[in-house]
Amino acid sequence: MYKLQYIRLGFANNSSSTHSIVILNKSTSDNFEDGDDYGWQKFLLVSKEEKAKYFASQTNYVFGPSIGNASNVISGNYFGTEAGSKIDHQSIFALPELRNGEKAFDFFKDIGCRIINDNRIGIYGGNDNSDEDLTYKELNIPFRHLYDGWLARKEKDETWILFNVITGTKIRLAVDLLKNTTNRKSDTPELVDVKITDNCISNCTFCYQNSSPNGKHANLNDIENIAIALDKLNVFEVVLGGGEPTNHPDFIKIIKLFRKYNIVPSFTTRNISWFNDLKFCKKIRDNIGSVALSCTSLEDLKRYESALENLGKSEVYLKTTYQFIVGLPGLNIKEILLYMINNKIYRNISLVGYKQTGRAVLPGEEINVEELSNLMRFNWSYINVDTAFLKSYPSFVQQKTCETKEGLNSIYIDAVTKTVRESSYTGVPWIVDFDKEDLAKRINDIFEKI
Image (cartoon, rainbow, N blue to C red):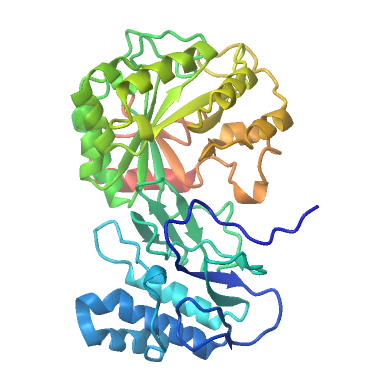
């Protein structure tokens, strides 16, 4: 057994200060090792007074460039004091935005006041020039200017939900920063799974949607009405599905529609014929969050890799994830992952559970989850899992970090049959008129009842 003393993610391009919001592990007092500013020197702020001065100082740097000395009024109103000292440029906060484009001022105030008034939480300062022993657990609060693209949404119980439109990272913060928010239902959906077509030429024997070459496409007007409704509900992202979503004749219009209404679309596909159309690829790249390539064999993987390499990193290459249906009969996931490791293919990975509905009549195959976990220790940037996978393999991750109940934060809309339900494979369908002006309310009423 080893004690983790220090960790840094990524390479150092220059030296910088490192400020962290930390959980205090013992009773202690304010400490400045060298001077009283918030720069490179080590410091620890634990008293209300010193933490308030720190946030007041951040206020000057965050708001000062746009409102000048009026930032002192904000710091006085928010934190009851004026600035304590200067903040090193590498540690200045950046505010997330609301979905309407305004800065999330209340987020800054709520989190700042909570940190100031909670004697369990401190502010730890230092720099990245030495391998110091960081004895405090860091809270993951996306304040650092290093991260761009954060959107924020405040819930009725004052919980904050933050979503990064660039990376897809999502963070939920309770009013009590140390409170576990797992299994908490959102006020409105955060993510919506939207089926835009039932058309697919692959005829996969394991298709849980039972899609076919004769499947119908959803009406574009219905999809726009859905996008408008989801915008009203402050939805962050949609996953476009099918069938084969790229078969929809208005696919590009659809992803642009959701972007128009400030919602990030992603999708899963087995079709890569569009890789040959660079203009089509660019339109996809510029409008989606990510694209998952459904991989059911080693041959699939090799075919995708060859196509991606030919496409080049200037298009959708960097937004691509490999998706594996864990438990799919005949899928040798160990063989595929070993091939990826041996060939240094470290693309993002998505593990989804085998859903035995539709044409997926064969029982799923059991896998060695411990063996899978060991393979996952290699250098993959992101490993995503869905609730169906977690229900089958609950030991894969710590359950306290994940939610396995469907319908807590998401909902499924079938734009082809005009129905809404809990998920794409569970729940009773509710028939919905997409032309109604109260579509947003209707969708959320169903979400609340699930």
